[in-house]
Image 1 (cartoon, rainbow, N blue to C red):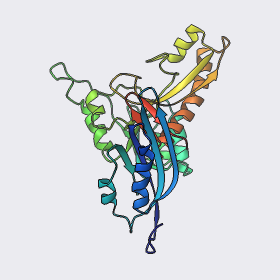
Image 2 (cartoon, helix red, strand yellow; image 1 turned 60 degrees about the vertical axis):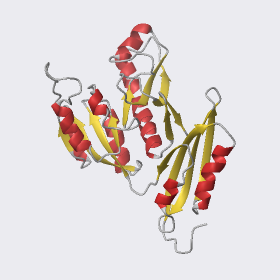
Image 3 (cartoon, rainbow, N blue to C red; image 1 turned 45 degrees about the horizontal axis):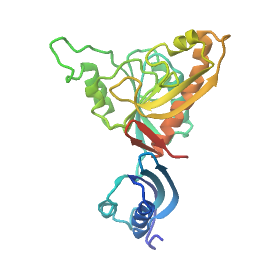
Image 4 (cartoon, helix red, strand yellow; image 1 turned 30 degrees about the horizontal axis):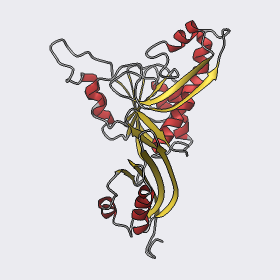
Length: 292
């Protein structure tokens, strides 16, 4: 129970990865109970092939009564991620000319259905400025620059230096159909779960550009969308969320694109919500995503 001088109940989450064994659940909950935390929900999954256990615990804690640093020190000897939810997370969006994902995120944000603040929208085109400014979100156009032949791949292109300055305070970057490849040096400035991309196909099928045209040429009966964390390998990061919809030989490329946009909006939103709720554990090149 919380002490009598408690004034605020805050929501925290603990995500743990460790060798499978009966002690994992007990060890993490013991730490929380010892510090007067009220456990709200606990989920656990074991990968029997690798003998690894994944756990997520959500809990209430009292910011007055509990010594949070002490709680950090007494974390079990496991890979543990503590999230205190003591402030709203900040989102930065990169976008090109396609507006459907941007509209979805800005509308959700306006309706207070997205538990985060959208700090900035950055694009390589002026096209979507009216969309961002309709919602009062700062919009910056930064045109791509190329690294010269005398420079190495370890040098950030000038436009990415500008982007990083605008993104320095955000918690997660969303590539809302940003049609540019990010440099490896840019990616190194963020944690492995720091950039979320939406790809307009059901990965690992139809990598790269024009997936709907590729799907049409192959006569597929399903098309999909995939939200994943961004890595140096194009369209190969840990997958967070996916969905598919039926299609047929009657669908033109344009009709496939139209169907795909509905999927892209929904899949990207679900992935962002899972990230904001601290429901994702990245292990290797895959994600364990706990329920909402």
